[in-house]
Length: 82
Image (cartoon, rainbow, N blue to C red; front, side, top):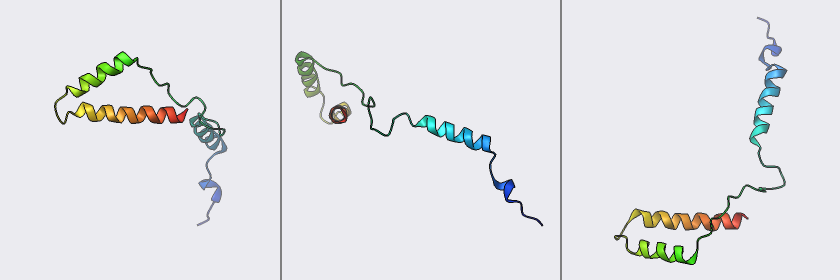
């Protein structure tokens, strides 16, 4: 039986297509993550005070309080991203 290495090579067009699709996934240049950080919504002091009061009124062990703590961490991470 004769082995033909050419049968195992993908066609050039298929290789070029795959490389083009993979290149499209690279939305960020190699210079950094410019524009990749989402904006941080600003809340007024009055809104912050109202939320603090509402969280304080929640029952002990309320899950939403844990979620708000996670949200605060994400906001800090976004600020650091900038």
